[in-house]
Image (cartoon, rainbow, N blue to C red; front, side):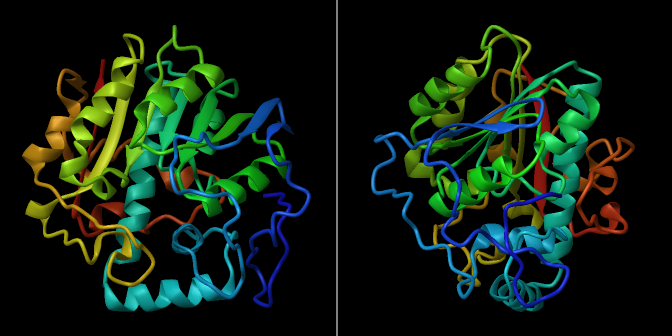
Length: 320
């Protein structure tokens, strides 16, 4: 992958942009066949700032996640933190890679079989290592992918990555799932909401506590999507043995937000009113394992045997 990033002292790994030098502050940046829009955050994201420190000496969860996936957009500090977290939570890396494989299978199925060419990936993290745009555009080059994240570091990284090479029709929006109105407004600027959209919420809903009414937040976004749209979601399962501490290394200091693990029945509520695609809401390795996954996506290291990964997350897809 061509990148605007600079290398650190570890060969074969690419580091994050120091201050994102040269990246535009907002507006449009060219990205391959289409236009990648780097969109400023809305004032509705209270307490957030785009002036967060992006330094090589401090690990960041998005870069650690990239490291676990075999990506190149991470520093030595991220790799050290990732190794420590993996040592403390056996099976964590395999679970993360299984989650990315599930995302790839779902996106590939929707783009290839359901004809979906618009994707809204909420809480996406860094758009690297087998991300939604890589999989969707490998099947449908015309696919439009909008990434959304409320982390200013992720936003700055993602904006620089999308400006660094040909990524097709891909955009990045700084927004928060807790403000669904802002998400809908931003999506309407970038997507054709008269045509089906796949809303992707993989391993993000656990960061929305029950008191914030995550079901209503998701319903508000889906209500704005036209018939024929889809929801793809995954979530740590309390009844599968997932714990708040282990979920995405929640106990390692990499995640500073509280984590809520939920049961199969509680996760099913996010799909209320949707027609579940077979095989329904199942453990991630069990969701259409015959569909090509992250193992075939460029730039990602997949679990050697995804079916053997620890299955502590529920996942599924539903049609509106």
